[in-house]
Length: 434
Ligand SMILES: [Zn+2]
Image (cartoon, rainbow, N blue to C red; front, side):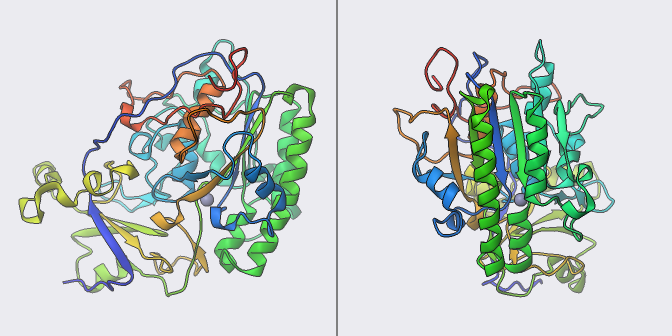
């Protein structure tokens, strides 16, 4: 019997295939009148986008040409790789397959990181853009080196951005020594160089806010100072970009991959608890910040089939992930059979992980700002709350690209496709986003 601290872990749900109301992506059509940029301020919680700390971005949010003060919903789990994958494919995690920053492959071996290009089950925007005739020029400037691995060429057919800038292109003084992440000023300088090649789309990941939030907590003085510095650099960058002649009808979307929670308690090492209870031969735990995936080791295929079926003793499918949280769209074989969710202030981490004062991954960290600067228009039908997959699907539409397809040739289920967000970019000759 494992004793869990009830205060520490608020919920657990089991895995089931998806079923939810239909969602529709915009099909291929004319492209936006100007280029489009997606700036991901890594780890910027909507609570932390304040007039005091980030005056430029907060003003752009309040005055939004598209949907003023709109809050987006990040994909679950609220992790970097999950959300960069969702934003760049326009489909939900159960379709693209990046269900966390790490997972266990169910076939023996150790848990491993998840989010390299080879792990994707669908095409990214860069792949679809590269397959167009003629190819649509794209670029990416990323502060985190692992995101370069996410957008790499693979044998299964992934294509890279036309141009990419990563921390390996920065001078040593432009990288934070422990993480190796590029400072935001360096990443934005790298992005400026890429813009000289006139891409139709550029992705930018700014790592400073996330890095300092982890180290000092998201509401610390250091985190606030970092947000202010990022705000100043980003405001100058966006003004310069939109002043370029080719960006006269350009659109810049600024959002975050996830929010942030302040860690107030010692980390919960669920794997250690399994070992202490001598259950590690039966269960595998993979910690991922605000969540942990727990997998049942199966002896053989018959055993696997039996354990994947809903158990009547547990109330049938009543506790399964697709029933309890269909909005997470996380019913994927790579998700744990049991998903532990940390309560606010708690974090699930292995003993060898660094002790952090800020972390993210749970449903409390899904609230992110969505700010649109440049050519955009208020949608007549109202704004609602866009999901990360909606923002991604809309970027495909802005560029005139067809939606992402599964690499195995099957169609992405309608329920896993993001919605077109009217007005986020202005479609050439047809009014904004029509
Ligand atoms: Zn992140």
